[in-house]
Image: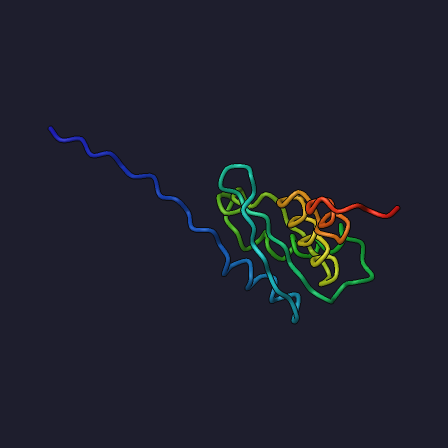
Length: 121
């Protein structure tokens, strides 16, 4: 008697489905995917100059309405959250993330401290 173990199929992250769904409601956009620190989940950031006057919750709601009908429940579980940002907001988020990872934003003062030079106050 032979027993074969079934290998659990890991669903591939649905980048194409998300891009197609967002493309149905926006013409000019970029999507950035980032790994979340929780399991194998992802953070999906949609960057677009459209909808600048709308509150972030309204922007996210529009994207969620477009995407939810296209993804399976398993694919939806692989997404931690969606963000819809303007290019300026995205640049700010990325800059803050880099500062958090490195610990310090380099400035003239921090360079002087590191070199042991006196600081004028």
